[in-house]
Length: 120
Image 1 (cartoon, rainbow, N blue to C red):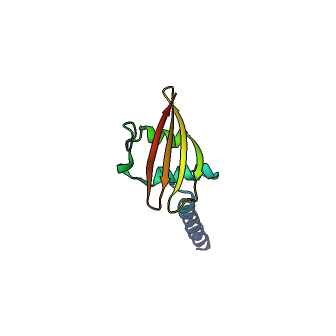
Image 2: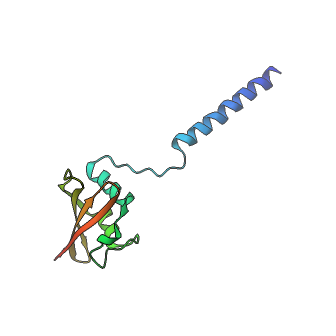
Image 3: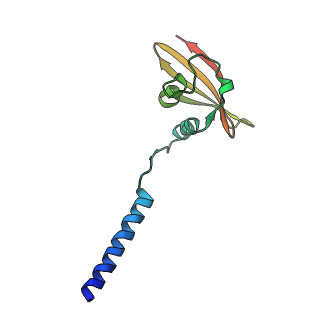
């Protein structure tokens, strides 16, 4: 009887340990955004994009659009991040032998595209 009781306590402990493990490290998408530019890019990827501010044909809401490629691969310039009420950021991105500079406005709920400049 003592062995069965110890086995029961062991199995309960293992079950609780596995449940705790999956609650902490389980099925989650880890995104290591430790640097300021990575955190701002993560905000741009997760916030809703103001569709009225799409000022260029190549900027659309699909995942293969120029906007998302610029967010992932572009270099971020902190133009005026503390501007009230919405901070402004500039992303430089090279695509098909053209250099795009996208000026973004980060508001509380949305991200707006203010300007897109294409340089060669």
